[in-house]
Image 1: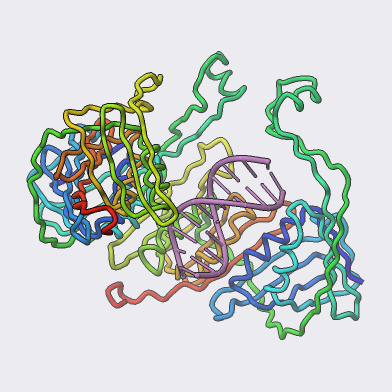
Image 2 (image 1 turned 60 degrees about the horizontal axis):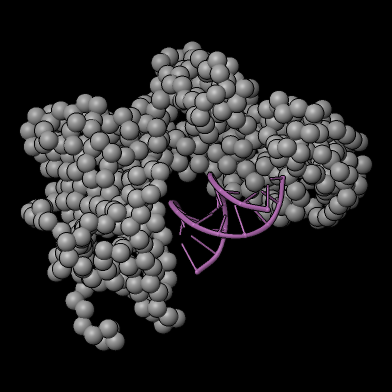
Length: 291
Length: 291
DNA sequence: AGCGCGCTGG
DNA sequence: CCAGCGCGCT
């Protein structure tokens, strides 16, 4: 028996939207620890690793380890029918080849800041922009999906110590990858004590974007921090970087870990639950002019 | 040595977005006076003239006159990587065939009107909607772009006295051109003392929009004013008019100057710096039904 | 021409 | 939060 209940269903929606471009079919591995997924992208260049720990679920029951093979396009179709506020429950029999999605949509009433709200609160001295009443859940869907057999090649990923770890706002990383891909196809990411530099070269010219370490901001999620043992400089295909940034909405910050000759790790933390990580091997840089 | 620094980088972004539909390649001419551009559109029907005076820059150094040929699609790609709040610096060596764009993004903190802002200002009696702190610049991009050789045909544009000059809100002009182009292909612009009339004819019917002189408005940029020596009535292709209105965000008002048999001038002033002007020859009107 | 995305109004 | 619209990208 497998049955898990996730109050913040939007997390599952976002995760699937973030990886479906890269991965077409994958096994979701369930154990008492939680729900995890590991898959190579279809061209076998990038690797996706997801962890959703059991304690992040409102309810998590998994009697024995199961590996549920799914087509992510189908999962996406199903999850799109769920609202962003829905509570999502996943269910499967131990021997079944069917996964059931249940969506409970709370019927919410949004009351905007204004005279009515002021009266309810007996005060106009508040900073909320709206208040949200849960009138009562009233719509429940359940959708069954056939599971599939996928030969999985579970790769052990060593928990390496990285030479350089950069944390920065995920929106900024998104913007940089998008901008640079308008100019070139690959990005050189160089970390020094001063900051992290993203560079590309293309027909119309060359571009460098430098982000300095910056912790003076009020909100920690807006800060850029750099932990570095050795300066590192590695080259990656921007195409994959842009795919990774589909996960931007999962977290306001992204963590980028690099060591010479190791795959880069681009990690989006999922609050209270785990992470979504992307791994990508660096390009071997010959001489620059040898493009 | 050419090096200029523009604090309000958004101006340059807007200018390029405004003309790139019309002009694919153009020379930016730099002298100690400022930065200017003159180019025909690709079908050689309309003319674009830009002036950004040196005194509008925070810093302007131009040791000798240079003409820098650029592909505007490439310039647009590069400028799009700049934020709207960025400070833009342009640099070129005297003999170089490369222009370097530098973007400094101030990290800004926008504080919305609210209790926190009220406390900072020691008063809630203010009309600003937000206040903006410059926390510290921390992202710097630099992008090099190869320049190209463009044979320029610099046309002297005589500074004519126009028979009729209309100033009106640029948004209103935009709306009129868009609306009329849904009905017909050409617009007849007629100026009399009473006002300016925009007319078109099409399969579904005919349309006339009259704007009266109107200076009673509080804000001068919302007013419509007409200076007229002779009544004028000329016909233009709406397709070009709609292209010109891509410059709308540069200025809240637009100035339209006309004389019989002379090209119309559609001018958007650029505050403290200069202007962006579009010239378009009138259509020779045979009998109307002889389209 | 179709899809994805950000913005605006409800 | 959701639906609808406009815009840029493939």
